[in-house]
Length: 124
Image (cartoon, rainbow, N blue to C red; front, side, top):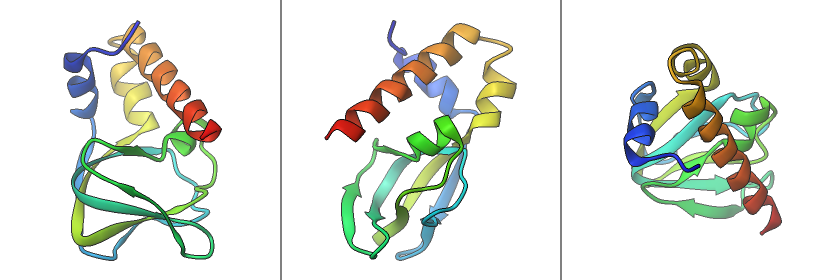
């Protein structure tokens, strides 16, 4: 029961496009977050607590999955790369309030897909 491309695009239509200059912090380490992000332009650097780069995210990549699902603290900071970054930001409340009442099946599929991605990411 996968999320179709049309459903994926509709879901992200509930989000906001945010622009960041090079080096701007998108998600601060240990911030309480309930927002899911998708890189749409540029790069996002994921940094650990010692400010060491752990991952480089490119267009299409998601970040903030665990915090989106559980509402906990960010385990890494996310910073716009050297050419800046554009991201889509989708809050958990946007899905719960706007998508859930209209399409509970889509909401369930999205949460299941994100849960599977979080598990795979933690296993690697």
